[in-house]
Length: 299
Ligand code: HMG
Ligand code: MG
Image (cartoon, rainbow, N blue to C red; front, side):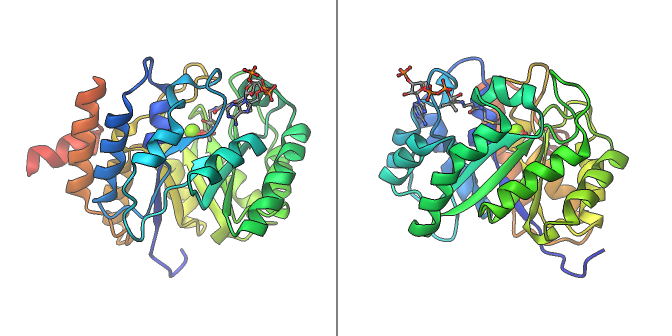
């Protein structure tokens, strides 16, 4: 294992979590969630997406979220951007960190962003060029790295090819998404190893949904190979409306508990995150994470 024991946990609950709720959450609740998460020691909180409101009506208030947000010093608040229109919207509210997103599966990409993988990369080119000129940091997501709801198996070579394309185009970080949470540890190890042959491991993040309860095990094997950026969502919120049957992201509470047990540093107050998880689960009528429940019973 790498000697560096510091892990950056990227909280995606306000974006990945709330994009998948069956009804639209009031902007005030979203702001409350982001504000509460900002007080837990998390350094990165993905706040929303500047996408089509027909595609994701749940996040149609992206401008209002950023206009209402009191950014805590030292905390990053990136947002998803699918095209130049999204980039313009994000820049208009002062965002300096974005994420573009595509997939290793053609079938998923068509449903999610209505274009082929090649076309998505072409669409991102001007966004990445402008981001470079503007000093905006860009993360690149690659979805369906361990399986696709439409295509089934996704060849690892496709994951590598798309990851490389995003990295070479200027993404500072590549987040590997198991969008429907079907991966198991051996597969996670193979995917990570293959991608890490051409992209430095410190530029890789893992973004695992927990549909089959495999996310922590998959994260562990990636940590063992040197990954130090892990995406998660408070209370295990999340899913993608274009990935039917996928449940939430791995819960931030569960990830932080595991990392603490491994002697990894996150800077995150686990009890504080569990309290936020308890609150938002109550607001949305969703279950608490396993660790969240245990921590709150203990405290
Ligand atoms: P399209 O229909 O191909 O694009 O959608 P278009 O350019 O023809 O535009 C269609 C309409 O959308 C037009 O409006 C545009 O103005 C509008 P109309 O004239 O018909 O009224 N539009 C926009 N509006 C606001 N902001 C924009 C924007 N762009 C176009 N930026 C598009 C293509 C990509 C826009 C659409 O498919 C879309 O927004 N998709 C978003 C899908 C999404 O957000 N999915 C969830 C996030 S990905 C995910 O969850 C996976 C991840 O978590 C990792 C993992 O788990 O694997 C990241
Ligand atoms: Mg996701």
